[in-house]
Length: 218
Image 1 (cartoon, one colour):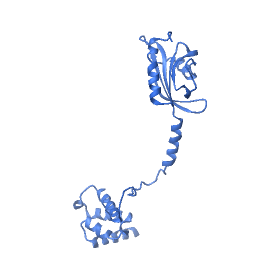
Image 2 (image 1 turned 90 degrees about the vertical axis):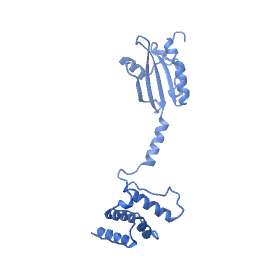
Image 3 (image 1 turned 120 degrees about the vertical axis):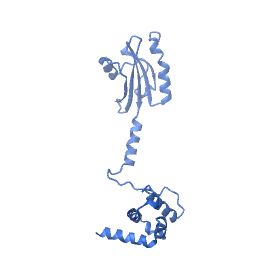
Image 4 (image 1 turned 60 degrees about the vertical axis):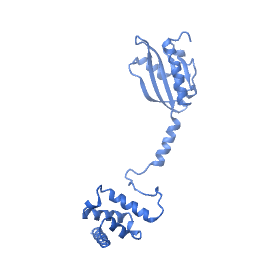
């Protein structure tokens, strides 16, 4: 330990802090690049890659050193272990005051379990690309059918974005058509309720419905 550069020594508490903060899936490794045969000088959660202090530089690490490009840290790349687990990894270059490379601080997070859950969630939430988004009030706590009626009518009118007094006759027909498609007029008393909300007579609502039926036939 005495032969380790002071700058690298100062990173050992960082290794311990990161590894212990993010749990057993987060392996944090500190490498001394001056001794690639036994480069690991500190490691937390080494069970992720089955390594300990004194283990050599990995194949990827050697390849990185050979390239000699240390200007930019390598963030969030993907690696695969020998037993097939997927790691989300980051490698940071540690340099001295002259810019000479001293070591690597590497984080390897085993995301295999998360990928399994991700796949399950995608399967559970998948719908057809052209699936229609259906609005429904089944999550609301309505005590009776009149509350359902009120909710549907209010939301339909609110979609026009203006007070009923400014809604045109054509827009009222459109509202009635939408309400009809939603099955509102199957509810007892719906004609009178919609007529009251739209400030028209119940006979006007009947006329709107007749007009809608004629257009549908055409």
